[in-house]
Image 1 (cartoon, helix red, strand yellow):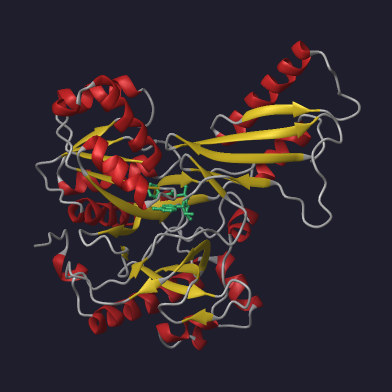
Image 2 (image 1 turned 120 degrees about the vertical axis):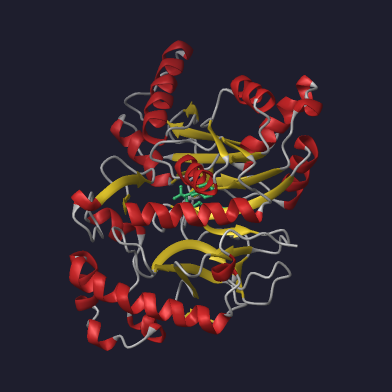
Length: 432
Ligand code: DLL
């Protein structure tokens, strides 16, 4: 028997859901046309007026938005409410001055919290649970999102943030955490730490809600075993709100998209043609009722498949499979989004040329990233001490740009293999 946070909405017959989406969409397009100059300009450039949009079936007339569009008018791209009505921002990582800033009114925060509360309830959560949130807090949406959902549900919320494993385990045992929310890699790490310390019998966890990065079924089984829990997937992105755009139910056959708030399409990333359910393509979202940052037809770059087959949990909202990759070159390392261009920007700032190779791996369920960087003929040295100092400087600059540890190995000029075609910048050895 499934539990729901908002049964009427989560199990709404699909026809009724479509009518609700249509009603919200028609209001939203007026709002965007009137209050969001960035998108109105895009519509005008595409030769579409608000009067051309008669129902949600006309959505394909609307232009797509990409991350570049959102970076272009930094820091207020797509802002559709006065700042005095906004109560929060969140942001994605990005090259300096090029972050995407997502704005929220109180209504937008409530809507997001509601989505996360649905995810927690779908994982078996109730107000009597102790929700241990070990996603990062701050500009990243993971911590604030699950924190808000747990609050809304009325559960005791532990705003642990990431890191400091000793403290995590101490609170987990002392306060009897029952639901763990963090990235799957951190969950796996915590699982190992629990095993090493022999404290599994002191842990009361029953479920985990893990997302922000890709993870395999093997990893799921591993985490379930070491922590003694059922592990659920959760998906989301800053541009659309944060975690909780979709979430797994107990059937674990895909993640239900909160379709009363987010309208999903799958497109062919090359032709941009909309594909029917069941076909693989790029996931595109339209926010149906967000006020401050009403992103329309946003190209997520996540490669995915949608299915509207009935689910045994009783929810009627479509499910998406785990994203199967990306249609751009973004890497997700320990839940942090990393573009090769960010690494390149740091190298150039530090006086190197763009000859490098990124090697990504997953060791003991934890992502590692290393960059081999060529020294230039000008800064080349064979003095090991000097090289170590230069590497240290690059590590610090990369940490400041990306917020994660990137190991750096400096190599002599002309030693990274040149490609005759597109340079192979990234070697991803993870088997996900
Ligand atoms: O990662 C939001 C989030 C936080 C989701 C906590 C789940 C849990 P961004 O930092 O903007 O937002 O990164 C969004 O991460 O486009 C996907 O490529 C990837 N991603 C998110 N969830 C999953 C998942 C957050 N469950 C980008 N599986 C998205 C695979 C995921 N990839």
